[in-house]
Image 1: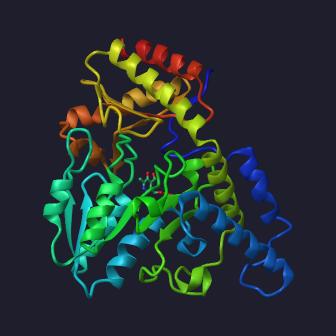
Image 2: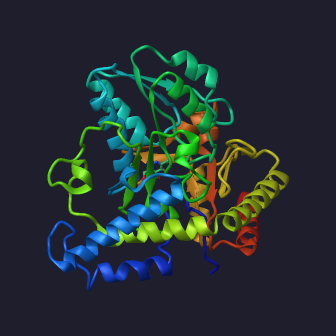
Length: 375
Ligand code: PLP
């Protein structure tokens, strides 16, 4: 059976070059980077080279990169750590209704602990309004956290403008860059970003490794307490092999970014055009142009997204829907509801996210399969 993986926003396979770069740090160079002998120095040097590489690829300085165990940890650390460190200036935070749960649930935790959070709405395309943001800013606002690009609908927010507003009001600006890093050109200094979350497994590095970019001098509380790793801010013996893999994967992705973007854009736009032509009642979710190059998201009226996913899976296609199983029921996505979709339409959605190994033949197979299932 034809196998087509169209869920790169969920995770990506580890590339051969990435695995090759990692392997020595799982075997011969196994030293603990905190130890003093030469075996340990190899690990330490590998971590520092990875830090330099990642910093250079996003326009940061090496000392501004902190390694974590996931995008989730980076988001939690940014939200909780920055809020705690700056609470003497105020206890108000601004975010959006369509953030990943790593941000939303961190905000809810902070609300339970004395902070106030404003959740900005989005328009029908998933964009926040700068006027809304301006209006939401208060004297006690200490942190704005708005994602770079959304994981479900791919909408890219006006990051430079948000950063500018935050800077004018001397408010820290964090962005969840998990879906954007490696898919968009990002220079944190040019954009004016103070903190950004990164996750390796979204760009062909292994699962369970991430990073947080933190502008030099920005105070942050520790999330994890223990040893003195990561300049005493994030304790825990470093996952050397995965850190090396993440740097290699980001390097590969960025070196080839224009070509990768061009390829994903052409697969994305062909899929959007063909689905729109063949299924006139299908509704494109997200922004028509201001969206990630590999993201397609449609809602199909009167279709259960999960049934559609199962049917696709039976024909070898891995995709994602706009709903999530929560304990006993299937809940429509908070992102699609925030766009104004009703529950039924939100449950009938299909997310297809392209990656480096996809081809036009995959799109043709997907379209033929969708026609067979939906007819
Ligand atoms: N933020 C966004 C936008 C994501 O898409 C994800 C993962 O899907 C995360 C955070 C969490 O990253 P991780 O899977 O590394 O914990």
